[in-house]
Image 1 (cartoon, helix red, strand yellow):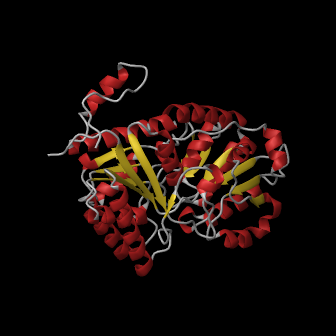
Image 2 (cartoon, helix red, strand yellow; image 1 turned 135 degrees about the vertical axis):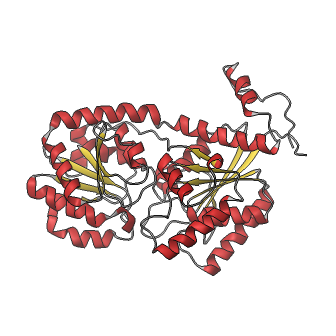
Image 3 (cartoon, rainbow, N blue to C red; image 1 turned 60 degrees about the horizontal axis):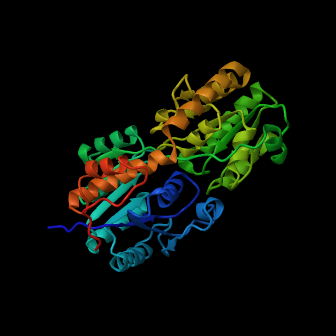
Length: 410
């Protein structure tokens, strides 16, 4: 019989803390979960040479345990060493819950948790690899591996309902295992629009379309360039700014050279608020997505989005209300970009609706609360904590969160 405990030890594992939604959520949870209830450690590998480190760029000072060979690159020898390192760390730290983020960390972290006999296992799908990454035979192998790992996992978290439904359709997990927990974030104060444009070298009175994200195949930067060409042909003074980097950055720079100053590559920036402040709308051209945090940030900045309707994008962008969704076709995307550039009233209305929707649905406090509820359910399942309803009742009866009666610290 399990013994009741006080503080839960949570070992959070993510392959690498490159700029993006998974890193942002990991940081929000590390900072937001109450320290009197959770002792957390964050384990991660190193970013690639074409990536920016989220910790260095936006979360300096966050304690991080670095695991060599846990990064993006896949290789039998390196992965075996990373697995051994994670297993050894689990035996030292003795976590009650291992919570993995991203595909490689989800595989190595959960296998290590099995080897180290960690009782509680949680995995977050920030998206999935079932569309747009591999040929069909390889995709089927990925689905089989994820299905096997799901059978050894207490709870599966999906960032959106569509992501969950895609995983279930592929035979990964069962409905009762899943919790849908959307990303949560906040945006810093926006600088003055004219000041932002000056700092980026943009004219003050031209339409500006922003792209914020990685420059990698699944994001389809080639489609972005095609859209930019079509838009500039219709609206010659339109400007495109690209905030991000990736393995296709050099290719993008070469392919887009004919656009001249109409398309500017900014690389990763710590002051992403400057990019949003300078823009009139946001463009997303991906073949596959989980729930893009860049679109949430854009909404918080009061910008409408034009995006391909993939993954859980439609759970952020409400078509005709906060932005416009299209098929994965550059003609459709370009047409809608031109439409919003020319229709000031529609653009401002969609942007105002986006700000209201994102403030209501995608705050970091809601993310932390939702994940805490998952941990409470795992704790109740293992007999470590009283039923979560009793815990929450006790908390709601007071202004602060006292330690619930009856817990015995191990």
